[in-house]
Amino acid sequence: MSQESKVTYSKVRCTSALSKSSLPGLDYTVNPYVGCEHACIYCYVPDVLKRREFKDQWGGEVYAKENIHEALTRQVRRLKPGIVGFSTVTDAYQPYEKKLCLARRTIETLLANRFKISFQTKSSLILRDQDLIKGDNVEVGFTITSLDKDFSRKFEPMAPLPEVRVQGLETFSERRVKTYIFYGPIIPDYNDDDRTIENILNIAKRTHSRVLYDVLRLKPILSKRLQEKMGIEDYIKIKESLHREYVEGVYSKILRTSKQVGASVEPAFP
Image (cartoon, rainbow, N blue to C red):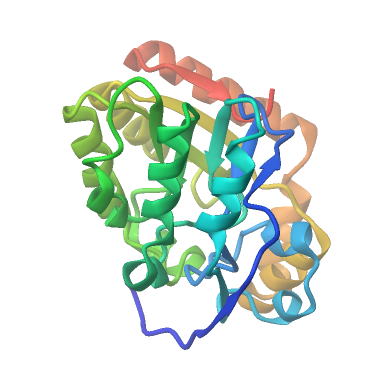
């Protein structure tokens, strides 16, 4: 962690564990927690959840679905097995998971009932469950927005540093688990330079990982948070840069570099 956080933890009960997903390649999604203490300032989730407590402070409130295992056990009996995104509106391996182990029990139940799992995380805590995360029914993705520590401290203040994520990716790759890198959000003039792209694609090539990439998508709550954290002038520069020509240009650069490096890349949202 790059700095100390002050997080309020609460436990809640849920009526269901699996939700239908409209994201590419996923049939369902599961989120053992609501809220994420990684506190990434570019996170889109508050705009999706629209919860009052997340509008003004993202990263300070985390709710654990304490009965998620019981709810999941009931659901899997009547649902057709499919691919589950783990997780899409939180990081299931944020620090609270060390104490509660909700993610581990969820994995056990899904795999025992023939569901496949696609993980996405920033945390090496996922390595705790590597005895379960194996075989053809799983894939593991790490979000790597940049390899620069200053970028991480600025935009991902409470998330594990980039090298920790790379090490986690390497571990799963060495264990012959299917892996991917989520390179996003791409933010103009912060993590869209040639060196960043080349370094991330070289890691992908070395670990036999595909790369899913996506540009920053401004939403109302996200925009407000960026202005507060970065200042209005820097925010305006980012906003004015996010035009169609910019997006096409940076995506073309990723494709060109992928051919030079020999890495597999694709847009996260085709």
